[in-house]
Length: 565
Image 1 (tube, rainbow, N blue to C red):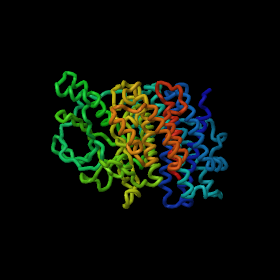
Image 2: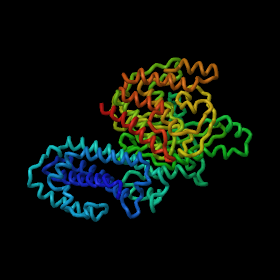
Image 3: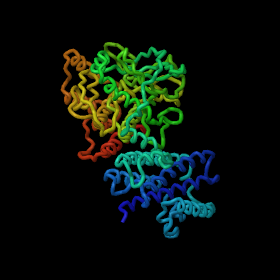
Image 4: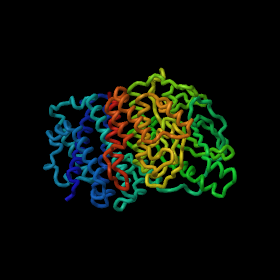
């Protein structure tokens, strides 16, 4: 007996109800001129649901098998599909009342419909029944524009959760049945399901750059005089063919060992630069969805990562630095004379170099929730791709106004954050370095086991801790450097970092005391969980799927609820 039989029945019912709604609203009497757009959205979600069913439940060479999936993922699929059924419950009752879900009359072929022929047959029967339905009086209020848009919004949220779960499913194995992950990544099915980029990122995490991948040969010919305190700038880059373009650049100074090896022309120089080359290749080769106009707020139907697309890197040994080049988001009125603003700068109100930076006026509550949700979702999707970021802090988050923002004051613009400053990102199960870092402020963003001299290899939990610190900054609208200025100054003067657990306790105290009144109890608890690592995941498999599922439920979805306030 298929232990997933109940879920298979649920997804089959969801597909039928979706077809029913889609075909009902195609009736001109029942709908306004916007019906086509809503019908297209339903068609899009239906395509995903049907593809998911075929992929997951096909007994003749299924990509994934029930008994090979971690328990937490099986449970999550059940929860998500049941929630989708609840969202469509009223439409389901209406469809059943008029015979659209009458399995007894549809025959055995439709009871087990898992192929295109059966689905086409089902659609033809539905069309026939629709002709009869037009002659009857039904509750057309369910199909009004407002009610339909509300249902679609909830439908899309649950479908997105299912996509997220599927990206974690892909992490569980390198091959599923007779189909490899690479085959899946190249398939139309992966594209239809919005999982092509996720699969490709997972493949990249376990492969290295080709031999011909090298540093760029062009030049930075102009750099903006941006007032930020980070290493990120707007610049004009001219390639070896003389073609110029505006880019975002990130300066990375050589560490002391690499600088010394460069001075003495060490034979190990190329090997020491390998991690930087690998990171550049990974970021150049991966696809990061930013929506149709370069705006991450437009992301839909796929687990996206809010980061800038890397174009390559310049190695400048004469200046003891590497420069990463990133593609500009397609935003309005952004030129070389504009400034790049980090989240850190934004919170500090641009008071660069001031002895006592003062917080600027807070953006709207909705804007802060949106900033937090985009960053939390990005971190979740990084981990779902099998990566870790390794360097999350507010100085490494650049902020642009959305391309859909209306003219007005900065505080009224919708703000879009982009993660940069990747700390030599690598696969979750890859090797790591344990280099010492004694600079005070960055250590406040690091997990206690990674402060100063790291005591353990880097894990996803360490990224989540750093995310919690940034979420705290967004809630308070104060930077860590401002909140703990006295402690950071003392550590800098003494050359000695505060005890790591004391740093964590100080952050938790702020989260518990100040965040509830700023962002609510739910957000405060999410921050606390990030800092404490309190996700109820004591044991996790090699694929580390338990933690992302818990983070999505206890952090990402909690923040998403705040966006609706």
